[in-house]
Image (tube, rainbow, N blue to C red; front, side):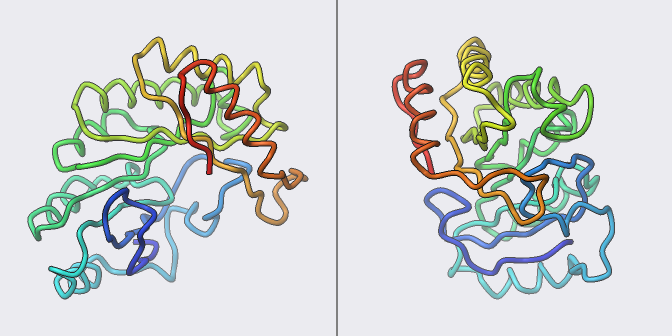
Length: 222
């Protein structure tokens, strides 16, 4: 495991939760805020047994546990970990970019909520993730998620150097065609040294949110 946040009120809607960070992600998104979790292995990793020991002592104090990353679905043991946490009495959440639809499908029976990162319309993915042909899998994951009836939230981090207004329009069309709920636009806060992305004003994101409202009728930015 890549790390543990022992208490959060913002990572699992409506829950007092802990966050388990999974090590490893094959994508290299320009605005990644957890670059230390990108390599498949880390010397500073946390043992799963230690996580279980911590959670055992938080029964009755925490409502849920969120698995984040990195990208949790890169871990073959994810379904077993989700099941173990559910059997301890916690609600279980997942943050994922949806890059492994089949692995997400195996995790869905143990999930109460998913925060799905949709980075843009399918044609724009390579410029954000640094990986060609990365745009199809997240939308397949969204279809699986909707079919399973698991509560979810779509997040999209917007920056004008990565997504144009026309890209936002295309994304909204793609999501509406699938019958998905509107995306939550996240204000991009580029970490230091991320390829020269300029820092945005929150007003910039609000203006794009207005564009999304034109497609869906409502959208919340943050």
